[in-house]
Image (cartoon, rainbow, N blue to C red):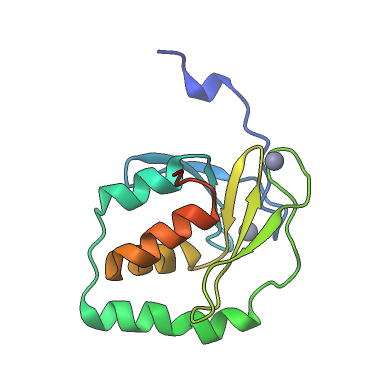
Length: 143
Ligand SMILES: [Zn+2]
Ligand SMILES: [Zn+2]
């Protein structure tokens, strides 16, 4: 297997402009910003994380996570440049009930701002139809 550390990752956080760190998130090699806890996931990685369902939330945790939907209104509202190619990402509005905007680069993957990865996981766990809606919106769920 090629050594991934021999490759330089120059990906930068689109919010903080700090280099992203390659971490293992539920078995997926995700790029994370240690400053704002944003995540960049390459195409297919989110699907993998959601299918793992390794993270289990209590009802209370779910309620709290999903309640941040109001808090996210105060989050970054500007479209972000893709950490890989620098092109401005497309904004995908997940659901009318949930204020979740996901930034997506058609070439490389998706950017999740602070807390969004947990929110996505909680939503996917809460309901299969929300899960499928998300994957469809992101173009990950064909047919
Ligand atoms: Zn950051
Ligand atoms: Zn890109």
